[in-house]
View 1 (spheres, one colour):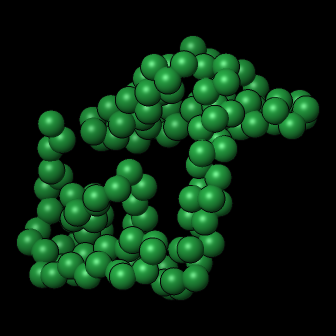
View 2 (view 1 turned 120 degrees about the vertical axis):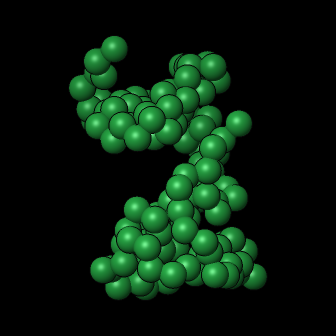
Length: 138
């Protein structure tokens, strides 16, 4: 059972009516970690976007960032599963999530980099390109 992260009270939520489902969380200032935790707690989908408070928010930029993933997720999934089982991919995802839940950013980054390297190499091979990344360390 997922456990909520520590965060202060949320004032309100705004859900977009656009086909790209965006949820905006509005809360009193409580620090960067507090704001990020509130966003993670409110997440309803497997992909979340957290905006740094010092960054200029440009809605079109968010769509440009997520569109390739949104449009190609089935393609990447089918390529990824050609040489690996669903169980292997799920174990990779579980290792990433476990590191996040344990607040171990170094391990989370390493597991994510490993997963993305494997996937990128599979896509490259599908296109008859050489591997883009070295083999991951087990």
